[in-house]
Amino acid sequence: MIQDKKFIQHYLKTGILGTYETSRIIDAMEYGNKSAPCFDDSLTDVEESRATIRRTMDIDGRRFRICSVFPTNAPNTPTDKLLKLIDGDLGKT
Image (cartoon, rainbow, N blue to C red; front, side):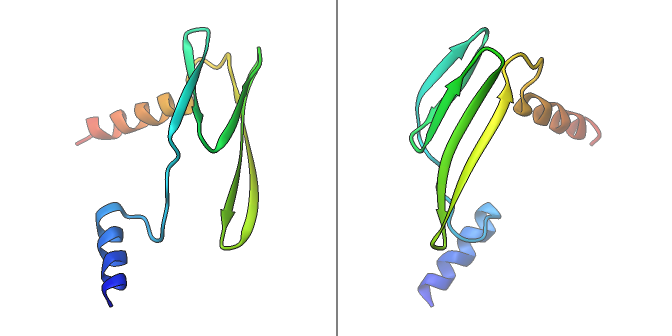
């Protein structure tokens, strides 16, 4: 019963159902005027045209290998685009 109450309180507070742990940033790689964070559970490789981040996630006994590739010469990062969208939505209110 107490454990169920903790799950419900966690969900109401965060909107996340179940457990989710973020990894620590242990270093950052600089390229041009941008910075790529290096997490303790992933491998970051920055080349001239792209940054590749590889990690392995274990979920419910299954192993997932994730590989994300980002262009290094893009004018905006995904975070920049998301912040612009949020700012636009906030301006409507």
